[in-house]
Image 1 (tube, rainbow, N blue to C red):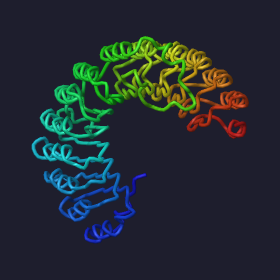
Image 2: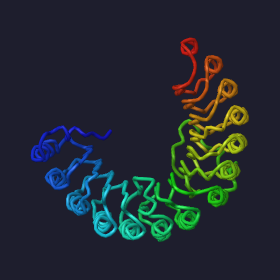
Image 3: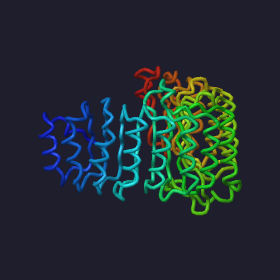
Image 4: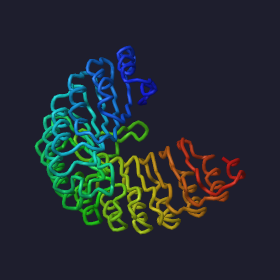
Length: 413
């Protein structure tokens, strides 16, 4: 885990001295900075760190020099592997240029970089994209930190700059996240075209953008085209040990996150569910708070019956799924041989739906994690689950917090 122990030291001089003293043991560090000029000694002390592997820097300072200082401090560092920068005031002209230079020149060991920026627009995206093209990163994320700053996010035009990088064939990049940046179906289409030409990309996160059901139809078409011979290629999958990663001869998206794109709705969910009946590569699908409703969730019943590749399905926050859809999904779970994690938190599930899930758990032999947090489950639903668990040998995590059951239900588990 990341630590912030250094922040307890009272002065910047002592902080930098302590960083030097801990260099042999300090591998993970989190810095929350309120003033860039006084933080300078602390950041520059990271130049020669030989053991620091993970660094998180967060600052709300309105200082154009923040990008330059971070560039100066981290460019010589050869040990860093994961870097997270939450910079509230890092603009297109200055900050983006320094971050791009950092991407190009930082140590060869850096594998993951996440940028949270609320002052970057299309112009800054173009600059950072050029730096990304020359980097050796495996994972890159860029967020707009405030959802209401639509005029200060990268938008479709910025997404196009990153698409150009992806289509050019990146050296190591396999995961990209462009979140909270007002990307619409237009930007999504450009990104999908780029990813289709780059077999290295396995993880795509576009949460909290402006993608609707029509955009998701394009994603579904892409997933359907990745592999149409699902059954023939998944029979040999070992569901007890399979890990996230592409099958050797099946390039394609393995992890897809579309959370909080509320325009997806039931129609978008149906498109994805149908595509997954043909797809043999996707292992994680997250549709948190996408307004998919009962009709959208029902379509995943067929997916669960026919797909044995999907390992994790997140549907939490879709408050109108309800018991009827869960009944159909439970039937799909009974014969499913692939899914490990299912999140149905805040999905409007009551005791009836819980009883159907209990029936599925009595025969399901692969699910290890089930979350039913914040639903309407009372003692009756918990008792049904408790009874099912007497014959289930695989479920190791069951989340029932923020429901309506009493001590009677608790004691039955």
